[in-house]
Amino acid sequence: MKLILNTTLLILILLVYENKTFALTDYQIRKICQKERKRLNCIKNLKNQRFNLLQGNRIEIPVIPFKR
Image (cartoon, rainbow, N blue to C red):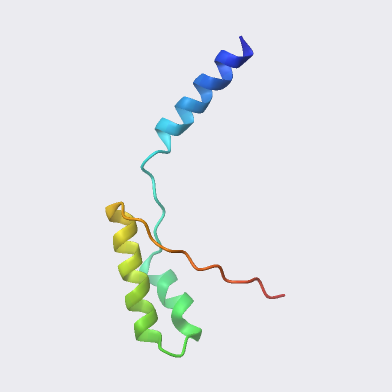
């Protein structure tokens, strides 16, 4: 019984969150690119990646190390 319940919950979760993507807003993009040297290129690249993400294409996500 527990196995059936777990599998149905898993399937339900996968169906509900299947096509939801959270792209950056214009304000967040400008804030991220504020410290970059080539600010306009950074904004252009992030907007292109956002467009590709919303279209359903795969994108590369760079890993930025956390600084304390």
